[in-house]
Each structure stands twice: as structure tokens, then as C-alpha cells.
Image (cartoon, rainbow, N blue to C red; front, side, top):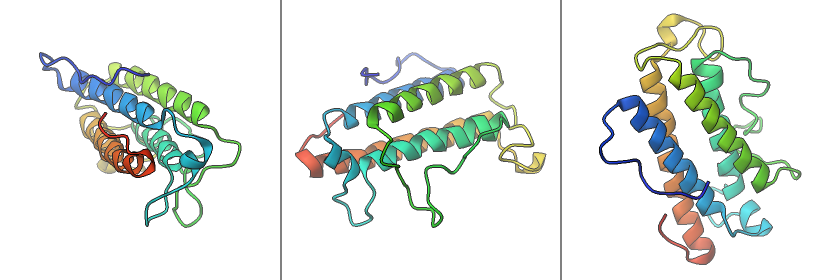
Amino acid sequence: MTDVREPRHDLADPKILLLDFLDHYRAVVARKMAGLGPEELRGSRLPSGWSPLELLKHLVYMEERWIRWGFAAEPVPHPWGDQDDEGRWQVRPEETVDALLAAMDLAGARTREIAERARFDDRAAVGGRFATAADAPTLGWILTHVLQEYARHAGHLDIARELIDGAVGE
């Protein structure tokens, strides 16, 4: 995924806009990861200590938690697998940037598949992340939340990447 252009300016359907912007930000994240070596992917230059690879894994699991486990109530083996017992992001030594980028692409394809079968105002199914219908947000709310997570963390990656090697922009 290398195309980082924003969606077409003539789009008006909110669901299509959100799905296309999610694709855009996944491409931005993938581009920010490109060219980083193993030390740069797993190391941190930030006081909070997260690494680019940890952030990428977080995005994969975040999207799965909200869309598959959340909206569709599909069983997800380890919905919090991006975190250790204290809630800090973690990456196992055998996990690679290529595998996590592929997982991000798969999560994106699954998000689009689930969203295309639902209406924007449909509420999340009960039984996955949400125990009651009162707790279940709409698809529109969930897609907006997932988009803001991607946009916010793409900005974090902008800063991390500039600190690592001076690369700026999308």
C-alpha cells in the first residue's frame, strides 16, 4: 500500500468517505514505516518509549477490536494482544514490519467488508466487545473513532520519523 493521496474531493457518502480516509491513513502509516531498519523500528527516541513497530501493531489490534470484535461481535482470540499486563504496547521478537503491515492491510479489507454490509446508523452487535445494546455504538461512530486513531497515530509517526532520520511529510 503506497498511494497516500486523499480520497476524491467529490465524495459525499459518509461511510465511503470514512472508509476511503481509513485506506489513506493506512497508506500513510505504511509509508512512514518504509526504509526503517530493525533498530529504528524497535527503538524509541521518545520519552514515552514506544517504538514505530509497537505503534503499528497497536493500530492493527485497535482496528480489530473496534470492527471485528466490536461492531461485528466476531470472536477475536487476543483482542488486547498489542499490550502487556500494564497496558504498554509490546512487540514480540519474531514479529516483523512486513507481517504487521500485511495484518494492517487485512484488517482494512475486513473493515471494508463488514462496513459495506451495514448501514451507517446500525449499532454494534452485542456479544463481542459490547455486553448490552445500550453500550453499542453505531457503525458511523466506530468508523470515525478508528479514523481518528489512525490520523492521530500517523501524526505521532511523523514526529518519530523526523527524529529518526529527518524524513517529513506524508
